[in-house]
Image 1 (cartoon, rainbow, N blue to C red):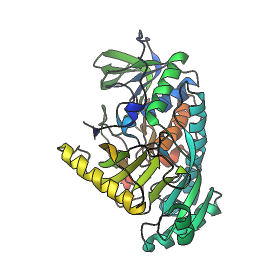
Image 2: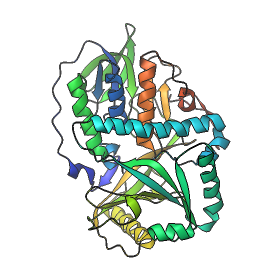
Image 3: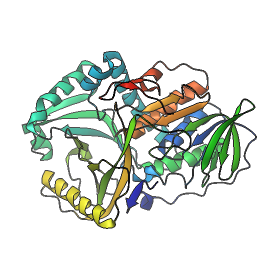
Image 4: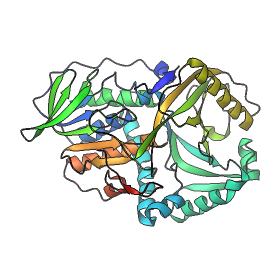
Length: 410
């Protein structure tokens, strides 16, 4: 499956160090399948617990969806807190939002320990009403966030326009968010955990997993691995074992502009909107603007480059509509897949029917934050610690959506 197409920006910002060659162990505590953001953070968490791990990727690490990740890190989610409360109850919803806020700090700590600078920078986020009809909904969300102590403020139309030049009904401004270069971040994690003894095997495709003598036999294109546990962190790829249900795979478009001489808007904040699908944007350390959106309900890549160019021009026009004075051109444009679960939450935990089979599938616009939450939860699970929030994202949770029912990765 092709998960991105077009010209990617992040790989141009960093030259990767070569992965070492390893003699595989007779048995690992865990084999992680997938060398992207989720796999890297899971490996980091397990290595820091003293476990023996191997990471397998059918490509070079960080070259799947990680290289197309736009690197916006936020504690707010695609589903507003007050709507999530209606869906799963107040305690679970507020706990989940707090997990996301705590994950922001965990990601910062990881970034500070890396041997490279991944451009992890704290930012505020501006979440504006796409039209006046969304203003009441936005105000309700602001009051809910404030009620439960989440750091935010509300700007009315006058304040929003005076601060940013955006002429919309209002906006929630959340604090404690961040941006990152995901490509450097993931490669930096792999560089660091190799020093701690992690084994990384690129161009190694998993074909099957079987139980063998109370261990798991992971059959790959490069021979067999043995482990006590296997963890699938395959992102938006087709699962190598079993099948995914309870989620949709779609595609989105992104442009990266030329570098600008000065910051384009207030505080270089992360910006997104209430409309679905939504427009989102951020700046980069070298002064570019990244803009994404125009989601389409298919996971297949466009049949030709012209489609990516057309959608890129539409994104440019939407950016110019919001900030008419910007003088920009498009330096990079691409299309990439992304996943959305039916209830807007990730899938994290052990398969309910397969011992030792774990999953971290961070579907949604907040995938990196979900990956951090999942890495912590899986590290708890594999070291015998009960995580009090695991039920919220469990694979066998009951979906509260238009397709109510129990969902698992089968």
